[in-house]
Amino acid sequence: GEDVEQSLFLSVREGDSSVINCTYTDSSSTYLYWYKQEPGAGLQLLTYIFSNMDMKQDQRLTVLLNKKDKHLSLRIADTQTGDSAIYFCAERRGSGGYNKLIFGAGTRLAVHP
Amino acid sequence: NAGVTQTPKFRVLKTGQSMTLLCAQDMNHEYMYWYRQDPGMGLRLIHYSVGEGTTAKGEVPDGYNVSRLKKQNFLLGLESAAPSQTSVYFCASSTPGGGGETQYFGPGTRLLVL
Image 1 (spheres, rainbow over the protein chains, first blue to last red):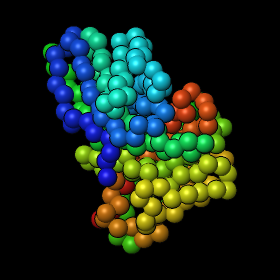
Image 2: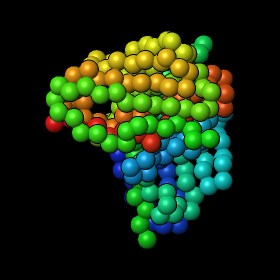
Image 3: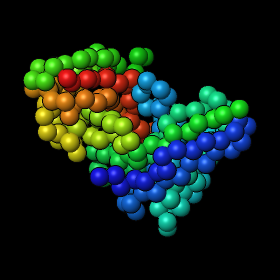
């Protein structure tokens, strides 16, 4: 089953900020990831955050991590039509080599003019 | 660098037929993975490999077999396809300890089993 939870759909106006939320279950997860999937394409890594960080910023992307609540968010500033895609949150479980990723079901972001 | 490539891109099978999906990576990654993606669900791990000659079961391994004879290739086999195996299949690779141990994905193979 899916232990990583995401809302399924988000609609925003072009130029506004988008915030995609995710909750995960394993407090020992070391890395948390955001992947983007455009129609008919594979998953593209957007960014990741190590569990000892609260925030990571990369150009228009800001990732916030609340370990106490096991909550992860992705904020996209100045959202553009090219940002329309499905966004997957994933947590890394396990240690000592094997990198097991648990994915959420994905949030479909629709950007309208 | 081509990254991770998958062949074929699309295939239609009849129930009971067999096929092999090929994944290749040119990043010298140790780990390789096969996932399936179904509507409304996240990716689920089928099988994975932590090195040449080794394979292990993931979350949904039944009906699939894999082989990792060469470090750069990871093959996924369906011996007797079933309609429940209609899905999009993604291969990924990663290297331990590198860049957040990020997994890099191929473009996917769409499989339809009739």
